[in-house]
Image (cartoon, rainbow, N blue to C red; front, side, top):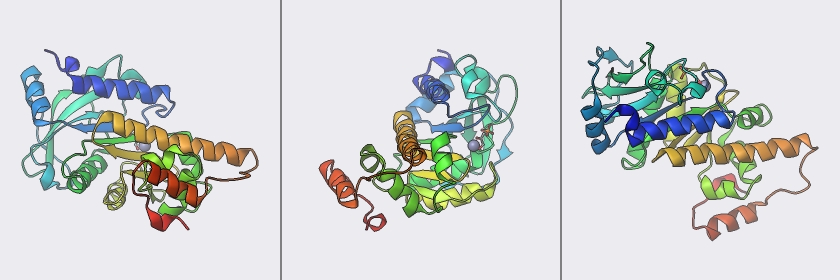
Length: 273
Ligand code: 13P
Ligand code: ZN
């Protein structure tokens, strides 16, 4: 079997293509990582032909990720090219037992490195793995235009942005009843952005990166993509309504409570009045 035939690799390719088609990935914008299960790791090992790369320090330490393997997009690679050449645009990264060094096991055939947000992904994998009892496997970062636009129009607080999203579409409180975290404008790829996001990810499964994009987590690629899509759709409705002169009515706080109750999810009550 070839690496590109593995379902996990095909899932990555599909997410990248779908994200590109949504318009969320101009140029090399965005990145995704997927933490393999033990079975997927063994299947991948049986496909490997190329020698391992050298161990490289991560600059962070994530002991609870020691020995884990991740599929990742490459830094500077274009999502629109992933389906055409996944062996160049994607990579398979192994972490050492201490969780502080990585090495390349597959991919990046034309050269390069894993995404510049690798530290952000791994710190957040570490936090979400802990917070979800090991269920979380995906970190997905994209540049959807409407959530970025919203970050210019509202105070940059978790409450203001979460509530505005919930007020814009009934799906929003159903899909992210815990709301979204928000961090200010920070340097892309910086360790400061990684740490600030991880503080939010202790509580939220999605974090708005002001004036930049959105960072989503999930147990699988579909859930992380679906979260990205739902947050962005609510942000799109919010900005459309704003652009048309503002809302005559919103989804009220009581309606948000009723939606959450109706679908059996716990809304973050402190964000409502
Ligand atoms: P990479 O190409 O290094 O993944 O960076 C893209 C990006 O969106 C940085 O935030
Ligand atoms: Zn980005």
